[in-house]
Length: 309
Image 1 (tube, rainbow, N blue to C red):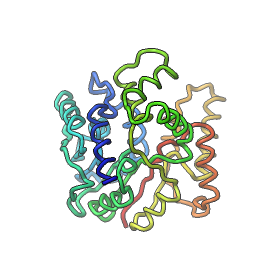
Image 2 (image 1 turned 135 degrees about the horizontal axis):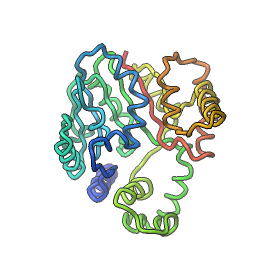
Image 3 (image 1 turned 120 degrees about the vertical axis):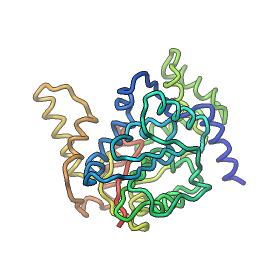
Image 4 (image 1 turned 180 degrees about the vertical axis):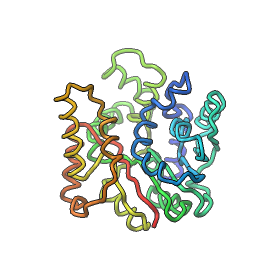
């Protein structure tokens, strides 16, 4: 009963605030969205290393379709699924508007089964933590992934989300379960101006979403191990060496008086082939890194990439 109530609230919420619903006026705007630039950046080397063969991609919980639209093209067959009817309507309208060959379907993979061993890549960014049993639903996605296929998941991190969790707690105390009241209160406290529709949706998703859970890197890494998934990397990185590389690159750009683009700099680093050093994945080191994210306001969404053995 509790799970049904949570699912009902989530359904109502996303019907009112289809996410991310970023304005797309021209086709090139697809490739400038934050979600596409981040996720394509960390998955590019795996997507491009397919020997020119046709690949099937699933975007599980695609929302309004920004990532699916960006990934589509060439020999990539992209299917975006979401349980929310309004989000799928927006995604389909955009695919038609920009003549992008991405398919969208209203489908709840939590309640329904996906085909076994069917997809070469599965993306599920910012989705599982809104479900009643995230680990169980992760395993459902793995079942639909081919052997040797890749999965990329984005999950809220408890340490990286410290500042957001504090604000959510304050808004919950004042506004309770009222979505609109939370958004309006946040607007008055932190924006102090009128919000665009995209800003309103972003605020709602972060601070008014009725159901979200948090998982540490160590917990997600265990999901991978128990599902026979080889861990490849995560963004932001928990590995000490990768964080040093990022800091070095940023200071190099400052010294050379280059314009600093954190995401572009990070993408240059993750595009390098590397092997995982097991010692860097020890809980004391990874926990310390995640705590640092919380202090500097980074790492709210941790994205892990793995390959099915």
